[in-house]
Length: 116
Image 1 (tube, rainbow, N blue to C red):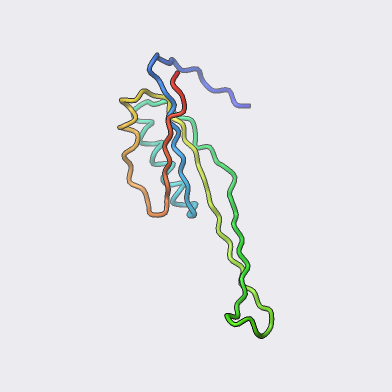
Image 2: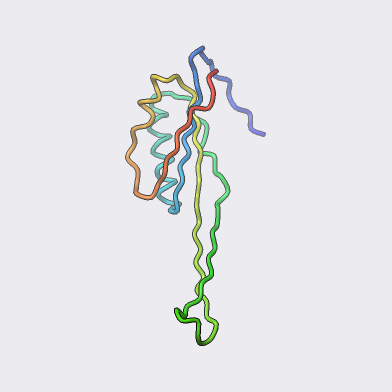
């Protein structure tokens, strides 16, 4: 298990969890790198990106629209990639964390986990 450095936590600190989801791995990694680099400049305590296992969705369908003829099948697969980034800061700093320009196809979910 990793040893994380101890940080000084004030009364009004909370944990903001940003979850990024996308079908395109390259654009997702680029977005994670951009978020982390932008917020490292502001000296926020950042944990992540935490890589969640890739979800694979398989779909097998018949090629023939009428159902006659030989049994030929098309196979489709979609991979969904997910990354989690945690920020330790207070509410006033959350507004400076979130404004980012991202590529199309990336979904963002932001949650405030707990008050410390």
